[in-house]
Every structure is written in C-alpha cells, then in structure tokens.
Length: 112
Length: 113
Image (cartoon, rainbow over all chains, first blue to last red; front, side, top):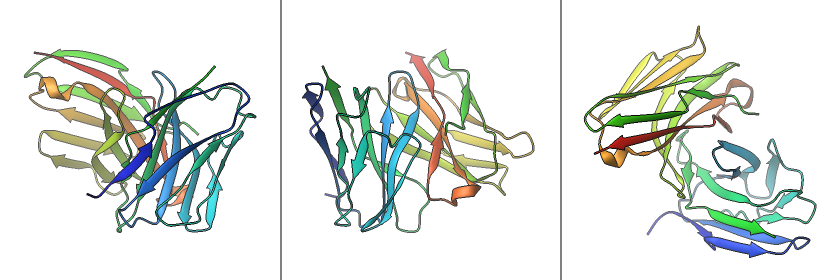
C-alpha cells in the first residue's frame, strides 16, 4: 500500500508546548515538503528537503524545525516560538522523475 | 512567496455546466500545475503544463497557459457533483527549478446536482 502517511489526523496542544508532526512515505521519493494551510487560504511552504540529511527553509520557517535522517521520514516540529500555530499541515513528496507533488492527508493542529 | 492568484475565488454552477478558473502569476516559471482539494483532505494533482506548452487536455480538464500574459486557465467540462472542491494553481518558479511550488489561494467550486 503505497503513499504518504501523516499522523495523527487531529492534534491538540497547549500553548507553550512543542509538538512534532509525523510524515512517512513509501514512494521512494527524494524530495519532501511541509506546507501550512490556513482557512480559505492557499498553501505556504515551511521547509523542504531534496535529499537525506539536507533541508531548506521555505517562506514561513520561523518557529518550525525539521530533520531528514531517513529518506522515508520528514518530521516537522512546531515550537513554542511559532506565534500562531493553529493550522492544517500538509506533507508532500516529489520524485520518480516527475514534477508533480503527492500529498498526505494532513494533520489539523489546534493550540489553545 | 504567494505567486498564483486565482480568479474567481468562488464559483457555483449547475451539474453539466462548464467551470472555468483563471490563475495569474508574476515571475518566470518552468511549469504550472493545478491541484484539487476536497474539504479537509490533502491535495490531488490534476494536470501540469510546461512553460513551452500552450494547451493541454486530460479527460474533462483543459488547461491553457499564456506566458506573455503570465496567466493560465482551467476548464472543467460537463461538471459533476463530485467536482465540488477547491482548486489551486501552483507555479514552479524558474528561480528554483522544479524544486518548489508557489500556490495560489484557491478557487472554491460548488457543483449543484
């Protein structure tokens, strides 16, 4: 069963706590991406990684951190420094010589 | 940076009618892609058009690209209730190669049965 897994689907945290969102893929894709989506808005790029052990900041990286220790996994940590963390977070991959991105089902994070 | 801007932002049509959405962008691109998102779900890739292409078809979808006007349109013919979704254009900026996409804010399309 190939695809991208994001867990959990819903996540609730108290303000001031760090939280890590999981993204796992078995598509053997090199590139992985994290986006944030706010209600009625498009996607904004947080971080992306084109290869293991390497990643780049996107447009809104402040308050977030990532790691890419394995090809299959690209976890995103939302730190307490992120001022408005409540949002829908989407992970995506790209690979196999294709320019299109494949998206996971998303994690809805609510911080109160 | 947000590059794609879709127009109109919301569209309500009867089943069987055609739906047209437009997208404009500001800087040079390698390709432009359209994605669909059902409520609360991930995005699904629909179609990709490269900067040297002018028109592309895929099933009931037709996309055009005018690089001189920096704009694209997506046409869905003979719409169905299942086409109800948000549609996003995304551009692969020439600056970054095909390594990252800039998404527009999306079009909400409602197809009334």
